[in-house]
Length: 290
Length: 238
Ligand SMILES: Nc1ncnc2c1ncn2[C@@H]1O[C@H](COP(=O)(O)OP(=O)(O)OP(=O)(O)O)[C@@H](O)[C@H]1O
Ligand SMILES: [Mg+2]
Image (tube, rainbow over all chains, first blue to last red; front, side, top):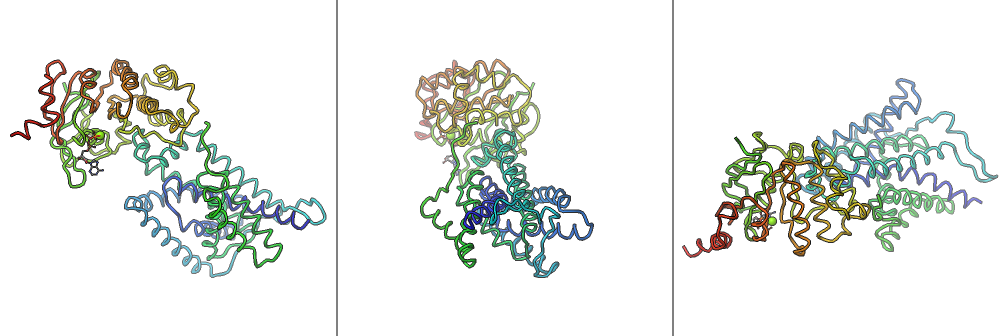
């Protein structure tokens, strides 16, 4: 029974990995930008929400309702003000720019908040759980997080398929010049992609901090989980990313059940195994049937 | 009266090469103007500069009296300049219908909508859900044309519709031109296939190494004149 429990816990945390990773996948898919500061921005969102909550006393829900749209807007500005400029001079400048942002964010957080880790209080839901049997119980918070992840990924999938701007994001991913020939402003479309990425990473950052905790230095390891979820699932497919996140979560939790020292190692091994045996990922982008 | 589209003394550099030199031409509403020329003459360069993908070194592009030279491609589309690029450039991961819908993203008001395009190419409605990359070359060309028409352009730029297609397929695609022109759209098309261009156009410009060598209506130009301008024989013997 403890193994069943480990698998279920893996599924639950996997949804969060996928929610965190979808923006990474979107930015790479649309603009070929690897955002090395993706994890640090998520941590930054969690710390800003932490300050907001301590200063004003609002609960986590309201903090999220404020933080997520603010980060989406912030993402749009980062793309238009910084990254659009960087990509126009080749693939290396955006990599350096996001690496620089990563360092700046980590150091600023260290300055402002010390190296301690912080948690966000989810309220009563944080302690309640659904008891399935003697040994297996699922935390309502984690169920809620998985539900949110599926909802966000499904909504994003729908947006990219059915919305006219979403469709243009896919078009610009295929061929930037051809997209501009049908009236799409690539700089704006790229801004929209990054806005979505920042909105989702902010939500994921808050949820990371609500289910456990985050420290100023957590960003890079979160980034690694995100990469692994994307690659395991298969690039360019959102449901693949969800599957990848869940596979990663299960590998970590099952190995951790055997010996906690193996938790992270098992995730990395799964990642390497997929790279070797099935480099296109578990669920690569399928043909369209719109 | 000024023309719908005017290209004024356009010079465009591609790398070291001056691919277009001081080129001027005009397209009136409802007329078809063809530019012919050999490989590398600068035909695609001309259309890309008119569409806004390339910036000219000198000269300008004027649409219905409005200077558009400084505007990027997406702004020119909104004003009514649409390009069907060489090689079609469909979005390979989008379905046929989705490719067509991108043409409506910043459409101007006008007669072209999805049903109108499906009426022009009836097979398209049946294959709407297929991935664009699964179509044959001729079918892809038709989708690229449909995508451009859906923007309801005032000026339609066509870059070698015939490229890589069987003559019968080319004929079906070109047979749609009169319907386009009937709506008052001006067409500037580029072809390597000289006889095709002469049959379809009201006016022809022959391009040689980035310069207009010869211009006139197809009826007034002799085959000998065109051959000379196309291959630049006079120049070599001089
Ligand atoms: N991206 C580029 N960089 C540098 N030079 C280029 C580029 N594209 C084209 N050229 C050069 O510019 C000149 C004009 O090219 P262009 O594509 O306009 O010719 P074209 O008339 O369209 O030829 P084709 O019939 O083969 O399509 C050619 O000499 C070509 O080699
Ligand atoms: Mg060409």
